[in-house]
Length: 254
Image (tube, rainbow, N blue to C red; front, side, top):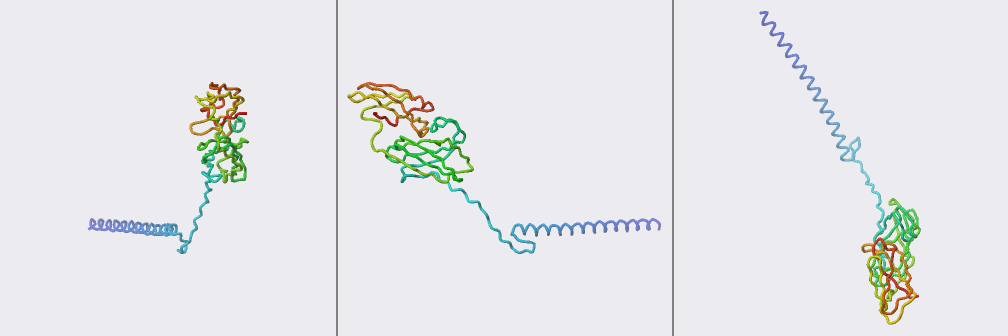
């Protein structure tokens, strides 16, 4: 009897413990379900743009306006083309070799069939700053890297919004006296041969520095030649073109 009574009490305690554990588990499960439902509602509101009352909220997409890229651009009825606007750090050949950092620079192509004798251009930056460029003696089809004539720098955060050609002069005739002079170039060494029957005197040779396929610098270097007898040659050193190769772009008979 005593043995049966002891087992029965133990069984009741065991069943009671199981019931308590089950009740605790049920409460935990109910709490987790409630939290999950609340999180789901919040997520749904985020995904649908709804507010706390469940109503949909319309959102307006705001996009920043991209600055207009003005390059490449054509000028003078397509005779000239500016292909790029960039920074240059170093010695500026268009400002007497003055050193500078982030100097405003452009690449200009003579797309015409004529010799470009002289051109002046003005770049207008977003803040209204004006930067001036000048090029001379660019043969038809040739391109030139030219730099600010005042050595003006520019920051990428202040882009160019417009470029204007304030003057452009073109020439139809040959400007290298090809009917009287032949020219050969080896790096900076220029050989001029008088192919005429008369002595040539008081000449000026104009050169650009040819760097790869572009002239480096908008302005030319000038070298005087006193005389070239008929049928003979003279050699001059275009020392300013040391970065690349001398390119003879004009010969004048003074």
